[in-house]
Image (cartoon, rainbow, N blue to C red):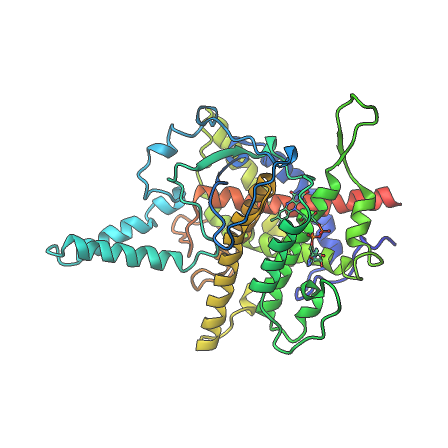
Length: 432
Ligand code: FAD
């Protein structure tokens, strides 16, 4: 059996890797692949020019394959038509605007206050409201109204090998793991090399901290699988174009236990863990997403997207072995609350580290995937309702609200994890 043919349960979940392989490769991946080509999902709004808040020597990579082609605003079908005409506050999706809108509530609350309140007091009120809203955010979100925010067509800028390696990505990953992953409760005997980043650091950690580590490690695995799966080979003859394709040698170097300090298979398993968490978030958000408008800016196209999303969500909801987020942050003690805040703040910090990535293409996908994962966490841990809402009722009220950018990031981030699991099947076939 290949080292990349994993078996048994995903850690801390009662779900078998084999059933995820089957669900993903037969049902989820084909649906998502098609869904992600839609206008709604393929344009991602992002600020790639934000300065790194942690160090100043973040030199930009000049490599050709790190370049991102941004869209001319005219070429994005829905930009400047509807979305940009909305008031800045109307940033939430349709469901949020229908009776569940944060700003309507704000107006109501303000109206209920003494009308003689000074502008200064109202400003303070709004600041506190914005602060309260941000409490459930696991990511630092790009300011959608900044002049540096641009649309990127994700299909024209695929995640693949860029040649970004060496000190810069090492510093990013090191910073992500060492500074932001929780430290183990007991000191662990580290080996001589990069082993602080290894799964050994899970010893003595509680479920929440293990979850955090596995999510980050699963994301790292997914990024590295993509660069192996879409590797750049020089052309066979001097004048031909270079070719993209799977690089089995690179894949083995990273994940074969013989060449990855024995950590490879565990890192692959963390990919399945991250997948299960995002799958569960999609299932929980399904009633909310079913009410979404999915405005594409192309006549007659929104219905198609809504139908395709509905079909996809049916599959997601029918899968019975979900990650159980209710096991995390149990109880109402001060310690649990502190842990939840720490968890959120660490994740938020990771979203800020993404602005330090030195290769624009890697930064684009890094930011998107961290935002997608952060959105999944927001869905899972916002408010009090922890159950899976099975029906979409007219009075359904979510504990969270999502912006268009968060929805796009959530679907695409899950799409990346899904495509990584699919790629594993291909690597298994190539190695056979
Ligand atoms: P790295 O992947 O840099 O890993 C550093 C160390 O972390 C390893 O030595 C190991 O000890 C540990 N480690 C590795 N994997 C895991 C894991 N899954 N879980 C826990 N620990 C682990 N390159 C591209 O070609 N295309 C991209 O699109 C791309 N996107 C990137 C996005 C981000 C946000 C970052 C930070 C980097 C990206 N890279 C990309 C670079 C890529 O991830 C590697 O950093 C690079 O290929 C160098 O690999 P490496 O062998 O030095 O190990």
